[in-house]
Length: 170
Image 1 (cartoon, rainbow, N blue to C red):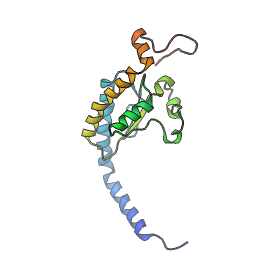
Image 2: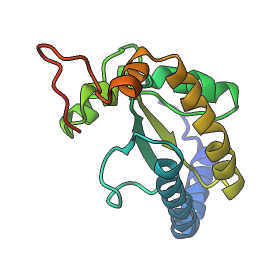
Image 3: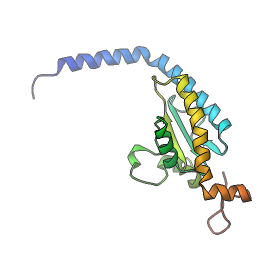
Image 4: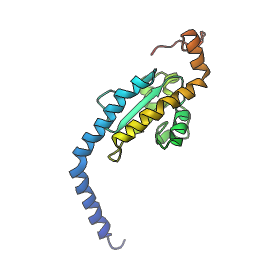
């Protein structure tokens, strides 16, 4: 009970008006950045998979999986470079399990553990994309150099050792 916060109500109305005026231009700009990133990343990093539909996705969404690398490792190294990503959904941030969304679209768990979400906004620029494209491949290389699974793959051409439950198709 009490007096309504009229300045906040007016401010919110103005914010909605500005957002409505900017939304189409922002979406176009963000979509161009996203599409550039989605096209360039697989060219720069082998065994990288785009999660979700290539076109039917939010304009700011870049969800990828990098095989032979853990998402948490990429998250930490990118953070050190000032590149902020997510290695899982916010609702499962305390869990080390693969995202339920990636499970639902049938991403192999071995690949899905190496997933990150890059979210773009109207504040991102082409220079930000250039920076990510320059810094990300060496991070993946560094992590793969430490990966016994990647070492095994390089020696044998097989993604997993033979044995029960180790079949792999992607």
